[in-house]
Amino acid sequence: VWLLDPRPNLPSIVKAVEDGFELSEASNTPVMLQVRIRCCHVHGHFVAKDNKRPPMSVADALEAPRRDTGRIVLPPASFLHEKEKVAKRWPAAVDFIRSRKINEIFGSDHGSVGIVMQGGMYNSVIRALQRLGLADTYGDTDVSLYVLNAVYPLVDDEFLAFCEGKQAVLVVEEGQPNYIEQAFAAMLHKAGRGTRLVGKEHLPMAGEYTGQVMLDGIGSFLRANAPHLLPGEVRAPNKSGEGVDTADLINVVPGRPPGFCIGCPERPIFAATKLVEQELGKHHTASDIGCHLFSIMPPFELGATTMGYGLGPASASAFNSPDAKRRSISFVGDGGFWHNGLTSSIGNAVFNKNDGVIVIVDNFYSAATGGQDILSSRASNRTKSTKHPITEAVKGMGVKWLRHIDRTYDVGKMQATLREALTTEEKGPKVIVASSECMLNRQRREKPLVDKAIKGGERIVKPKFGVDEDICTGDHACMRLSGCPSLSVRSLDDPLRDDPVASIDQNCVGCGNCGEVADAAVLCPSFYRADVVHNPGRWDRFLESARRAVIGRLQRRRESRRLVFADA
Image (tube, rainbow, N blue to C red; front, side):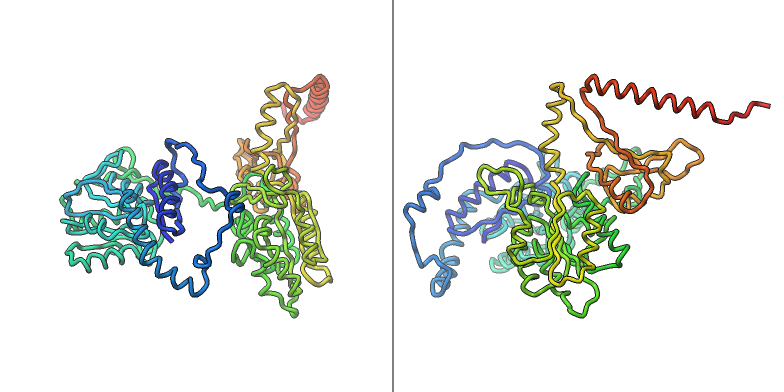
C-alpha cells in the first residue's frame, strides 16, 4: 500500500488526507497516512473546504449491488492483481504524486549538498539547520531539501533531478532497515550518477531522531561535505547567561513515568491487587493494552507480559497447569474485551478450563483511544446500541464463577473479591468485572454542568479531600499504594519535623481513593473529607456558625488547661 508522511503542520496534514483519498482512487490502491508524534502535537490553523457529497452512497450500493469475481482475492484473480499492481497501479500512483507535487523541494537549487527526508522529519531538520545558522524561523534555508510527503512509492526522476549537480546527499530516515536510502542508492547506481549518498553513517541506526540527534547528524554531514557552509559557532538553546552550561536535566528533574489520571477508577483495582500480593505472595500477572497497562509502572509494578489488545487472559492461558499451586491473574479492558477478548480470552478460558483469575476493567468507554462508546457503555447513544452488560456476555460464554464490583473505589471489597478468586476451591475461570466510569470522561461531562449550576446560584456540594498534618507521620506509604498525581508532599514550618508530610493539591477530584487505600491497608488515619458548599442556604450557614462556636469553645478549653512556664 502507498504511504504518506506529511510535514508536521496543519495545512500539510489536511492536504495529505485529501491527496490520500484521491491517490487511492487514481491508483485503485489503499493508502496509509502516517501521523507522527510531532504531527499530533502541532498547533495552527487551516482553511477548510466545502463538503462534497460522494458520487455513490452506501444506500446506492445496496440498491444496485455489483459483483466482479475478478476483484476477489482468490486464485487465479490474485495473480492478475499482482501483475496489475506493477503494470498499472504503481505507475498511476507515481504519476499522481509527480503531477500533484506531493513531494516538496525547498532551499537553493545550486548547492553542492542536499538533504532528503521523510515528511515527518521536516521540522526537526529545520530546527537543526536553525541551530547551525543555516535556516531562519520561517524555514528559509540555503541548503537544498527534498521532502518526501509520499515515502512510498518513490519517484525516480524526481529524486535524480534533485541530485543533479550535488556532490553529496544525506538521507534522513528514521528506523531500520534503511529502505529509502537503499532505494535511492540503487537509483543513483543505475543512472550512473556520481553523487555520494549517505545516511546512517551520520545518524543512528535506530531510535527516535530527537533535536540533539538531528543536530549532531546534520552537523557531522555538513562538516564532512560542505564545511564552508557552517558558521563559527552553533547556537545552543541549553545555555543561559554568559554561556554557562545548565545542569543535565536527568540529574535535576525526577523521572516521571506515565500513569493513571487523577481520580482514575483503575488505580484502586491495582492498589487492591498489591495488597493481595502482600498477603498471598506474588502471582503471574498478564497485562493488556489500554489505560490499565500503566499498572506495570511505579508505584504498582504489576504485570509480567503484554501481548495485544484484548489478549491479556489469552496470554495467561499458557500458564494453565493442573499441577500449579498458584493461579495466574490477567487483566483486560472493556474496549479490548469487546474487540476480541470475549472469544480469544473468555471463550478460550472456558473451553480450555483455565483455572486463572480474569479481571475485566470496565470504565464504560474505549477510554485509552479517546473515550468512544462501546457495547457496554451506560450512556444513551443516538446512533449506536449501548447498555449491554459485560456480565451477561461473560455468562453467555459459560463462565460460572463471576463477581461484579460496581464501584472500584471500594478497595476493601476489591481486595476481598480478589482474595476469594485466588483461594476458592472452584475450578474453571474466575471472572471479576470491576466497573467505574472513566474519571476523565466523567469530568468532561459533569464539570461544565456543575460550573453552570454554581453560576446560576444553585446549591452544590463538592467533596474535597485533605491530609491532617498533625496526624501524618511522613512515611508516605499511602503514595506507594496510590500514585495519584494530586497526592504529593509538603514541608512543614515545624522545626521538630524534618520529613515532609503528604498533601493533596487543588487538582483533587474527590474520588476518595487515597482514604480508601489508607483504610484498606490499615495506614494512618490522616485523610479527611470536607464538603465544600457552593451557594449555601440558611441552614448551611446556621450549621457553620454552630460548628465554629463548638470548635472555638473546645479550643479555648484546651488552651486553659495547657501548662505555662513563667519567666524566671
